[in-house]
Length: 91
Image (cartoon, rainbow, N blue to C red; front, side, top):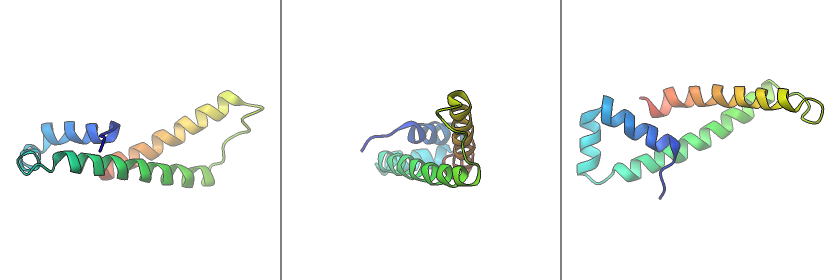
């Protein structure tokens, strides 16, 4: 199992803010599994949230306005990440 961006963010959060939980996961050898699960779940939820946001706020045409399209998608991804980070990674 690999740990991606969100798993590493969770690890940093646990190490600095939830030291007891971090120590418990380390001692029970469940830290890596926990971080991989958080990463997988966060990626899945961000994809789903991004799809919902795109449905609610369609992007401009990529062919006629590529910079507007890119900016719009980046903005929606940031919104999705912000929602998921507060609910999943930083809890």
